[in-house]
Image 1 (cartoon, rainbow, N blue to C red):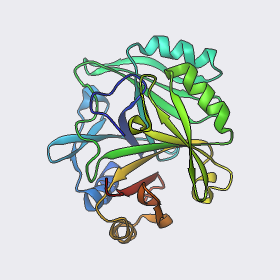
Image 2: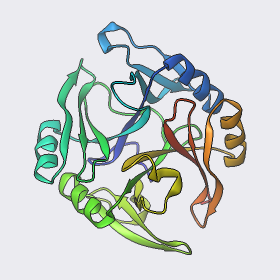
Image 3: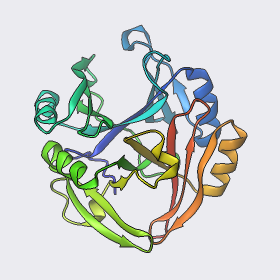
Length: 262
């Protein structure tokens, strides 16, 4: 699972692009208890969501002409420029080139060979999320893609990821772990065929962040009460937990999981 040391290639940041930060804050505060720390002019208005005083996500205003509301997942890199070169060599593209974010770190945005957007974060004073693997915080990430082997090959080239197919009653699931991950216990996400994933297919290739919860059904009910939409009702995944998927009131997709007992 996610490791707070944020090794190279592991998710170390997530952020939300939304047309209305105030409306998004009302939703996620009600759902997860997140509090907004607004960003100043020096950050372009980029704010932070915090839970119990620790940063759980970033948030920024994205207008209609800039793109659709969406969650983005960022992966640790020691060298954003080198990663950018490798992305292009592997068949991906730069959505925006690496840039400094004050002294916090260096970031870049890319699309993989199938067009799924992802980011990289090279830490400076901001070493990554302040809380993970707890209720209301990031716990898992999934890539929905039309070609699982091609995606696995792309990210192996870019980050050195290792993959392993796990058998489940509904079929196999491709687990992702860092280059130096020695077992499935170090996995932080999965790669999923987008064909047949009705709740995700309309969005095209993309990353879906999962946040931990204590009760998937209660979270689903609260999401609907707050104006979100349940796109997949709470479902048991053997030995994993109980999951559900949503869009927030602006249409950004995310998922939750109540982990199975260890």
